[in-house]
Figure 1 (tube, rainbow, N blue to C red):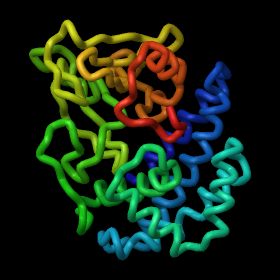
Figure 2: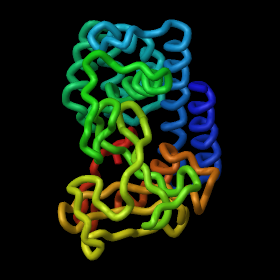
Figure 3: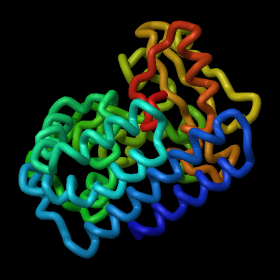
Length: 261
């Protein structure tokens, strides 16, 4: 099950990168990251973590060496240099960074986020709860780990509500998907439709920006009703132009993706 999810993500990234376009290089790089995350996930399946965040940080750091090496060899300048520094700093130093990320969830720490995602998804898929996880009862936070949503998914199950297509959010930390009301801002809870705007991409019209005039935040939504073959994490990256558009119009993203947009 775990491998099939990562396989779909890798295949989708490779497909979209091969199609060319302005985001081709981003998708090529993201495909490398996804392949390394798949390897990490497979390592957890064969050597099951304990579910203790403090106890498993070392295993996560060790399993992520391949990801660091891939970024050092193929990543953009700043990330490549940082990956090389991390590889030279030793695993204990990196463990501390992983633990700091768990408590802060900074979307500016690319490496810690990239390493936590396969671990977090493995825990979620095996129904194991991390010992120091902070499940949230707030509807706009992940019910498993309290993480911030990376993106929204429309019509993910084919079901509908009185408001139209179903809507879900996907956690940036553990990749858990949970239901969320459609006409409401995932950041501040604004429900006034006049303050909620939707802007689609011309090139990939199954991806749209969902922006709130109240708090000035936004995220991207992947409409599986328009394109059932889309893979939300990958298609969210594929339309980088929407992030640039949103930034130029004064909106701030709720959570940056692994590409930094």
